[in-house]
Length: 466
Image (cartoon, rainbow, N blue to C red; front, side, top):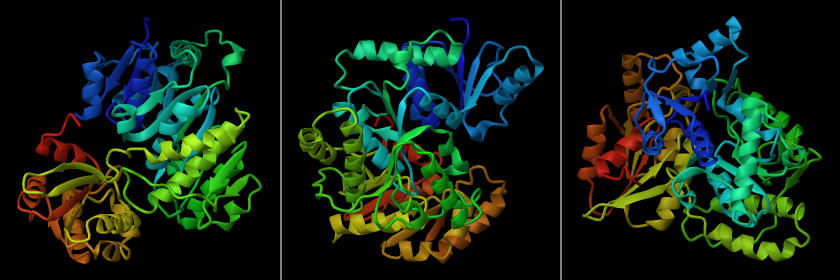
C-alpha cells in the first residue's frame, strides 16, 4: 500500500481502538501522531506501528486522516484540510465520531449511551455478545477491558463458523470505505457493531443505530450543552433516529423519551450475582444489557429462551472495565488502591456507597482530580455532599482539557474547591504519592483521575504493564 492511514491523537482510547482494529484486520499502513506517552502508544509501537510527535510526519495527498476533535487545530489535521481545499486530492478526512458514523452505514449498530455507565454497560454487552451473537463484527469501548485481553475493542465473535473468513469480510468493508473498491452487497449490514456512543457535541447523531440503551440523564458537558433541556433534547433526537428499539429504565429523567413508540421501559428482571463488580447500580447495567441482547438474538435466532439461560451467567462473570473502580494493588501494609474515571458528583457518591458496603470498617480516602473547570462550577453545590462520607478527601491538580485557563487560575480555583469540599489541595503528583505511602494499613484509597493521572499512578506503583 502506498497510502497511509494517519491517526492524530493516537493515545486516546477512541483513536487507539481504530488503530488496533485495523491492525488486527491486516492493515499495516498505519501511522500514529501524538505528543503523549501512554500504555496505548506503547502497545502501538510494540506492534511496529510508527507513532510520531507532532510536526514530524508530513501529511501526503494520498493519506487517509482520522483525528480526535480535540486535535482539530493540530498541524497535521490543518495540513490535511489544506491539501483537500487546494484540490490536490479529494482526501478522506474524518474526526473520530464521523468515522464511527461511516462504519455504522455498513454494520447493524447498537449504541450504549447516557451520562454515567457507558463504558461499563457497552463492555459488558460486548463481552457477552461476542460469545452468543451470530455475525458479531466489532465492539468498541472508551476504556481498556480485561475480558478483551486488556484492549478496548473486539474484532469478530466466538460463534462465527470461520473467524478468519469473517475478519476477511470485515476487512473488505474497510477497504471499500478507504478506497471505494467494489464491495459485495451481501456484506452490507451482515455484521453487528456494538459501540459506546458519546453525547458530547451530539456526536451520537452520527451513528445509524438499530438499537440503543439509555439509563440516567444528568447534565454533563456544560461547556457545550446550554442546560438540562438542551442535554435532554439531544437524547430525544437520538431516540427518534433509532431504527428498532431503545431500552431505558423506569427512573429515567425524561418522560418525553419514555413516551416514544420505539422505547421500551425495562422493569421486571432477575437479579445478578456479580462476581467481580462493585455497586448495586450494576444491576441496572445488567438488565439493560440482557434486554438488548434479547432483542438482538430474537431477531437472529428461533428460540431466545434457550439462549437466555446462558446469557445471564455470562453477564455475571463480566470482570469489569479498567479505571471503573479498578482494584490496582494491595500495598505490603494492607492498603488497597483503586483507580476510577469518575468526574461528576453522582459518580463519587455512588462509588462511596459501593466501597462502604464492601469495606464497612476501613478508612476510605478519596483523591479527586476534577475533569474540567466547568464540571466543578456546574456541580459546585453537589460535590460536598457526594464527598462527605470519605474519611479523607484530597483534590489533585485540575485537568482543564479544552478550556483556556492559566495555571494561576487553575491553582486558585483548585484551592477554593478543595476547601469547599473539606479537603486538601495537592499541586504535584509527588504529594499524591505521599498520601499513598503514609496511609494507615486499614485504608482504601481511590484516585478519581482524568488526564495522565492514572498513568502516573500505575507508573508510581510499578503497574504500567497492567
